[in-house]
Length: 139
Image 1: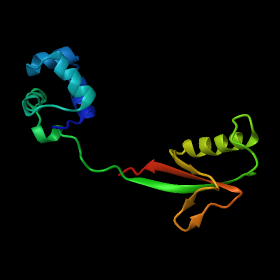
Image 2: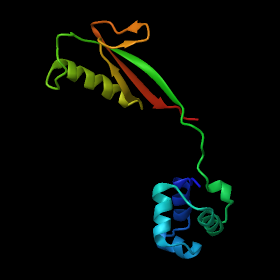
Image 3: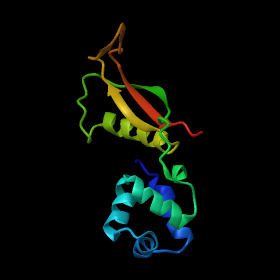
Image 4: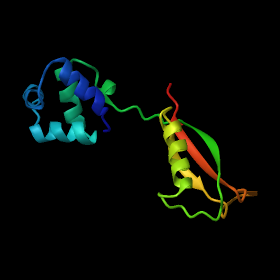
């Protein structure tokens, strides 16, 4: 069963228990507690033991299986196609500045598309890089 590791750690800390103390309260091995908190996988027996120790329902420990939603945006960056992507050249500095600016707003780089790439019927203009950015949509 997939376990919400953040919730298990939060419940353990709310009781001011170490992993060793949680192992004692559940009757589980310390290594099992460590594995559950690190990997998020537990047997039904382990889930029941955790739920009993924390005085919660077993299903409340399961990981939310909803897929993560992302939003995307495309940023166009003009450049001279004759300039090679070299981190000592002006283009790389400009690209870094753009990525850092958007990164501060929570955007992450998903893909950079250069002029020689074709997406469906849309070809990237010769003088532009298309930078596809993504960020998680918060519910």
